[in-house]
Length: 127
Length: 363
Image (cartoon, rainbow over all chains, first blue to last red):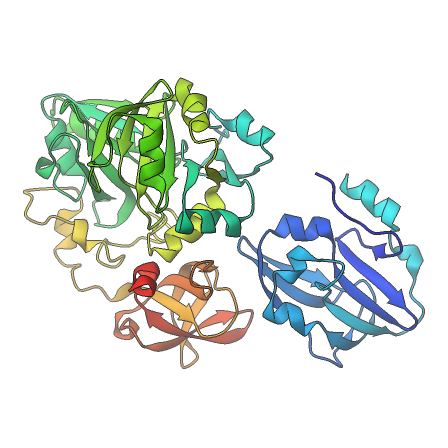
């Protein structure tokens, strides 16, 4: 089975994706991660204005099978949580890079992309 | 413990199933998505490989006596081809396992189905008990020789009927008949663990592929959907909702008193149950009032005080609400009681409801 990992995004070894846009970044979990979790039934997101350090928990995702923590790879302040996944958690399964995004953060400083994986590097990891 | 594999392991692997260890068996947890498989069984039909379930046969002149001494229900009520649910207890009256007992259609022997991983212990228990009480009975653990599949759902009877030689439609609930499916001799028992109608099929392990292929058009389902389906129906999972060491429970605490036949002269655990009919804790069904998922081990609270814990929980794909089974102080076990489940340091409001969630939903 092959999993989608679009070019232009950055990835973590723990299967989050980051899409920087100026001084904000949108974060979600990868296609591989949603498949591993199975049917997602609940997503708990941090409140707007929550300050996150790199490595902090940014979401709790519950599938029918298990509960999983999602960690932010970048420090910043939460400027938006995706309310749609609160009402329809299955969006994370159906469209992990689109409607199933999790949060947007205003990053503290320039995104350190050296510590992140490119799409090609991430695809190598999950092969 | 070495991992045991069902006869269809390679076939499941090729079909892309995900696997999990269950009772020492490497079994498919899902073929598709749990939601899809669950819906197939609720709405039409699905098939499960349940070859991890144990099969032990008991024959000989004292077979009925032995069965009656080691299970809580009365096997002498069974006619050939009948099946019966029962508990297996320790001396202190707590559940070791639950099982379905079949009186084979030929009337020659009993076959009972212990849960995954319990077959050797139960066969030894039966053998040792027969020896200790001079009972003339032959106990054979046939788990390795037999395969088992469950075809479940509102369309299951028609589906199995189409595949089988001879009529099965007049086989009533909790009875069984010998039949042939795709050339394989099967015991077709109208039993199951999903809250739906259907058949459990027992056959020679070598015939597993022939039987499975007879249902090639039926949605294959894994243990993930089996768990959400049984929980919807309020059916207990051995080793989780009760466990000899981690969760020792009497049948009364577990609401299984309906399979305890006190009129029998003796069964193991009977004496201990004399004082257990009014338990201090009871199994309850809980429906959460908000979107969060209760899991095994989570505390159940009342006014911030813990008075029990969850043994099984899920987001029910049928009811579309979070549900749980758990044990609480009997004073708080009445339906309608407001409780809470502690989920990640937060008290999620919950209400005690019938643990037969599906039945209530359909009523």
